[in-house]
Amino acid sequence: MREVVAVRRLLALLAALFIGCSFPALAEAVEYVENEWNYVDGSMDVSGGIPENAQGTLASIRDAGVLRVATNADYPPQEFIDPAQTGQAQYIGSDMELARAIAERMGVTLEIVHMDFNQVLDAVAEGDCDLAISGLAFTPERSERVELSKGYHFTDAGDMCGFVVRADEVGDYPDLASLAGKDIAAQGSSLQETIVAQNVNNYHEFRRLGSIQAVYAAVAEGKSDLGAVDLETVQSYIESNPDCGLALLDGLRFSLEPQFEGDRIAAKKGELQLMYFVNGVIDQLLATNQYRQWFDQYDAIAREMGY
Image (cartoon, rainbow, N blue to C red; front, side, top):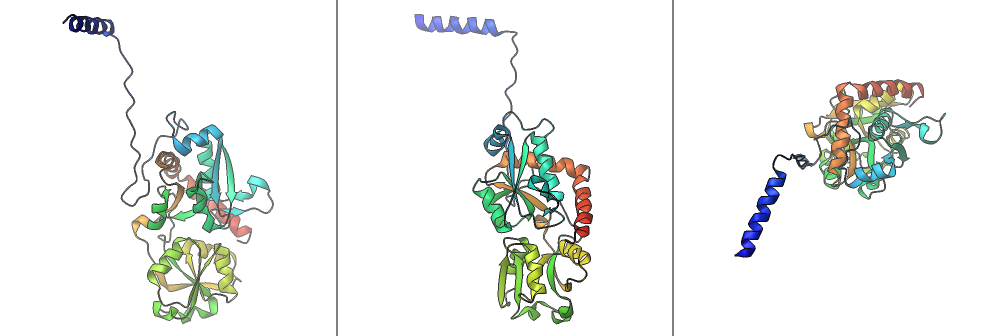
């Protein structure tokens, strides 16, 4: 009984000591989540840089002082190489400006890592790079493997995909049935590869190539009959290279469902806080139309350079 009384007196004394004292409220736990399509559309305020409660890759970026971004710099005007420059300065394009904006908001140095397109997702999935920024679109397969951001670039063509052929053969392909026995090329690991796989099943050979430039060359040189392409990108290429001998098919085009629209940034699966930061930067750029301005700026530069 004495022990009970002593404990009660101690509790009363402690209560008296703390009466009138105020304590800072405990910080609410932030829940970072994917949406129903397994990509991340939530965002955070990035005005203060990387938050103090940073975890995982976001904390590692802060501690290292470097953001490593994987890209395939062969996709103008979003990412391409300026041959007049060397080192990091040679990587230009609207996506490269986006990468620099993210690094700037983080308060770290940017390191662009150029590689084949089909290696870009491997680089983030395996933790060799922090982000992949390379004209990436959403696919269910990608969203299962890596984290994807919200969309940051939406084409005027409604994000449609189609086929490019040799200009003198445009009339040979009135419908999907006319693709029977033909060889089709697409950039490996691209959305166009997925669309062909889902919609075309009567081709002779389906070639996955390392870059969109390789797709154009394969068709122009007769190594493939058709190339599966993003319409906005190929239209810009044909206009910049009127003697390339290529043309778009008008009748064979694929409109995308809403979740497939927009280019996205990728990170290692589970890095939701990092994606919330990335989306915070995207929100800022979309609010000012800055990304579209970069796209138009580098589209003009790419045309002048003959891309």
